[in-house]
Structure formats: structure tokens, C-alpha cells
Length: 575
Image (cartoon, rainbow, N blue to C red; front, side, top):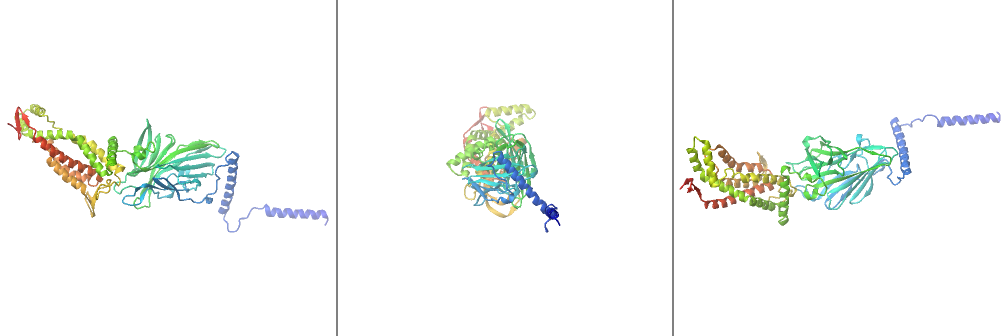
């Protein structure tokens, strides 16, 4: 074989070996499935895309931004504590969300430990967690990088596969019951991006009491002229969606506390959704979340959008709510709101002098009775005169039996001469009713009554004053012996006996009024039996003061002479 043939043979052999080894289709390694191979190839492709994205970032002067890494490479940081002198919170980088919120100045009901205001039962519903439309990137369970961390601040960041970087900057100032939260959306690509998200504003707020929870979702709507409209929705009406224009904030409340997420702008929120879910806690089986959906924003290449939020977690006290503009409307007492706020200020003034809200209620009651005393005295005098004039009125009815018009004229003439007003007996009650209703709302809902002690067994003015807990339940009354309603019932009965009878013989209206007055000592104790002891204390004190008033007025009345046609009236007869 010549040299040329040998060389050609060697070259053919090399080419054949190369084609056989390097150009034939890859055979899957033994034991690997096609799905696993596909996943490996996808991972290689994603790494290549990541490398290209980082090159693009650096090329556009963004080298200082955070690198995107695989989720497996980000460790779980599950115990990030942010706190000040009034609140202690625990955050997690799993969703960049809140795990727990403890208000260090307040206690759990009937317990020594501090109050845990928020304790979410599900990891996928944590407050301040985000979700993009379609939940493509599973942001609620996505681990964020912890970029910065201190006792008063944490910064979370993540870079999504579409080139959208999300940063959460969460900070807390001393003395504040609210967090400053800045959410930054950044487009690190060379193309336009559209972005919107929903953020959970509340989850895991528990009821204060078994009998009256006060749980609800709340929405604040800016209606202009610096006025906020409060929309409250009870849990029984979920699911609920609010798409009003001008939504400013949303969250959840129980009887005394609130969790509110407020947007810095009134045109950035699209809608609010409130929905319930089953809780594993047997005490509170039906939990709920409130989520805020933002409007869509357009991000040009390298574009940035900053969203500023205020996250309030605290008591519904006026001085605390005023820390966050626009949420004081949560102190909603209905149509008596104006009166209630005045009464709360008076209560707090008395409390500042004598630090006992039970005594403050008694002093407030005395103040109300002093203001109404001139009307009460005039009413009692008029009722006594009416009682003295009843025989004369009976004579007029007999005399003008066939002429009702003339009888009415003579009767009114008699009333005018004696300065008697038949309706004056109801006047103090009518004037006192708005105050009573306002006090009812104030003492039932005001945070000042929560866990406020008075004396002995009355250790919480927001609860009934149960002295003895029974092993059985009584109809309408429950399983406790409450003392103040019983005292109130006895005092009301005495007051009824001392009150002058404003009857007029066969007048059915007067008879009905008298029967109603006789029933009051029985009805009111039943009505107020299970109500907060602060309210019962007010009514009991008011009744006892009324008895003293009536005894004083009765002594004054005995010195007053009544004359009819120039003759002194004694026992209904002119002499």
C-alpha cells in the first residue's frame, strides 16, 4: 500500500470515529426518565437566561442591583424581629411578610401575657404578602433576599423571571403603631412591562370576646373635602368586593383593635376583596383575609415605580388612630358620635384626676344629673301639681260631660293658671335619652373601658360584673350572678314608688304611661343584665341620684301652695 492510500485510510478512520462518538443522538443515561432530562435542560436554559439578564443589567448601569439566584440557594430567614416601645413584630423572608404582631402595652383578656393582635393560621395568607395576576411566580411562598436588617427596619428583594424586581422596605419609628412600607417595582429589562399586584392587608385578627366579637372588614373611601366614608362588612356577609372610586385604605377590626393598610394615594387602588376561610383553631374556626388590588402601572425599560403604604396595628383610641391620617373614622358610634367623643373626653378628664374609670363614670353621671336638675325639678313640680289637681279635673269633666271642647278649654285654662305642663313629666327623660344612648355606645365600645377595673369583683368595665359563676345557665340571664343589675332593679322600683302619679282618672293614655313606668324596674335589669358593667354602673348611679332628687323635690313641694279661683287647693279641693 502506497503512502497516499495509507494516509487516506487513516483520515477516513478518524472521521468515522468522530461522527460515531460526537454526532450521534444522545442516549439517555440508564435510570433517568425523559421528564428528568427535560427539567435539567430547562434549568440550563434558565441559567443561560439569568446570565443574559445580568449582562443586560450591568450594560445599563445597574450593576449594584441584587442578583437573581435560584430559590434553593436562598435560605429561610423566619424570625426577623422589628420592634419599638409599643409593638413587637416577627417577619419572614418567605413571601416577605408578617408572621406575628404583639402589642406590648396590652394584655390578653383574663391572661398575663401580652396581646398578640395578629396570629395568622396559614402561611399562604400572611399580611403584606403580594400576589401577581395569575399567581405565576407564587410570590406568597417565594423567598426574598434579606438585603438589610435591623431592629427597626428590614428590606426584602426578589427578581422575577420576567425582569421585574420587587423590593419591600419596611421600617418602624419609636412610639408608632404603624409601619412605613415602600414597595418598589423596577423593570430591569429592555422592553416595556405592565405590573399590578394584590397585597394582604389583614389576616389573623381574633375576636376579643366570645359573646361579642365585633369582627369585620373595613374600607375607607375618600369622598372629598377631607372626609372618609367608612364601609364595614361583617364576616357573615363574606365574600365581599368593593370597587368604589377613591379607596384609601382597608383592613380588619375587632371590638377594640384594628389592622389597616393605607395607600399614600387615593387613586392607586382598584378594589378590595374580603373572604373567609376555615381556621384550625377551635376558638375561632372562621377566619378571613382582606386583600387590596392595585391599579396596573406601565414600566418602561429601566423604569421604577414606588408605592408607599402605612400599615397600622393598634388600638381604636383617638390619640393612637390620629397617628395615621384618615383612619380616625374607625371610632364610629353611629348617630351619637359627636356626643360620644365629648363624653370620652370628659371621662378621660375625670380619669386624669382620679385614675379609676368606675369613679370617672360616677362623676360623669353626677355631672349629667346636675345639668338636667332644673328640668327635673320643674317636671317633678308639674307632676305634683297635676296630682293635686286631679279631683278638680274630674269635676270639670263631670260638669262639661256633654261638651268635650269646652271641657278641654277649661282644663287647659286650669293648667295655665297653675303653670302645669301635662307633658313636662316626659321632658327630662326625652332630653336624657340621647345622652343615655351616647353613653351606651361610649361605655360599650370605647377602648378606655377595656380591662378597666373599678372595685372588688368589678375588674373589667367592658364586661358584666359577674360575682358568682354558676354551674348551670338561667334563661335570658346566662350562668352568672351579676350584682349591679340587681341593685339597679331595686333602685328603679324605689324610684317608681316615689315618682308622682300623673294619671287622670279614665284617661287611657295616662294609664298606659303609668303601667309602663311600673314595668321599667323589671325590664331594665333584664335588658342590661349581660351588658358591660360600665353601662350598668352609670344607670344604677343615675337611678340612685334620681331617688335623692325626688326626696329633695318632695320636701320642696310641700312648701308650695296651689290656689284655684282665689282659694287654696288642699287634697284636690278648693278651700
